[in-house]
Length: 334
Ligand code: GLU
Image: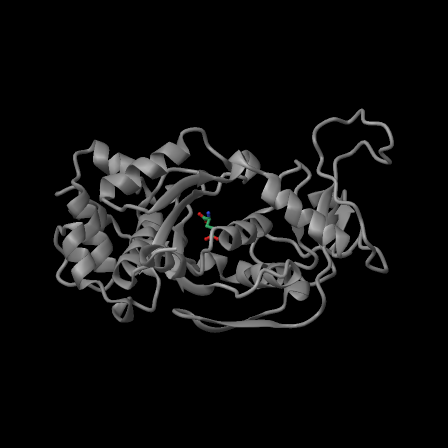
């Protein structure tokens, strides 16, 4: 191995991992820009990964839109794009390992049943319900993981209904220190309970897929929105059960919100990058606003090179960034 091979192997890696569930908007763009700038300032390699396992929420054309918009802003990457759907085998292997270890069990509960059963129990996070343990076997036993394949006619199947798979989560607190959001603690069993690692569709869950991918792709720096802070405990738990070695370092950034303080969404107007581009807005203007949201003053159109030379992680605002009508007008040059 020559010196540059060794260097490649030891360089830290991060990833840009858009979910093609909608068009890239200003909020996603800010997180990607910060992630990219940190990588380029600190010499991390960048993997581009399309997280396209989220079943019905995936939108046709959204992956292409994300790739095109990232390139339009000038963001580049060193590996990929990798598409999760292109190779499901690594997830299957992880699920088989969990099955052999007696960590998982099949569950055919519907959301409605879970909602009904957990009415008197503590509720999960946001719209996530706490799983009350209905299908959990009393003793953890080795099981053979079998993904639902859509073939309901197979012989020797006890049930015709497809099963999801859940992981036994012990009681207890998971802690970690986030490099932006600080010390975190979370009780998985109390908030979401035994969570899904494989959906009834036969596809691996987001929690499982992200851990398997970050591990096999050598990603050790995760920068993302703080809506995923509460998923991190679940992901750390999976690292441990899958025996994947050193866990990544996490940087969770506050989300961009609308004037009502709620997470940026369609109801706040059209903040899609593609829409601004269509109206003739230059990427320098978008970067100028994102730079302003990263604490760079004064607000002005800015090249990516200038942003990279001036961006300072330490100066990132601690609070949520607000997208206003006035900023929209500034972008449009009104
Ligand atoms: N693809 C996920 C998203 O866009 C991010 C995955 C992750 O950072 O773990 O929300």
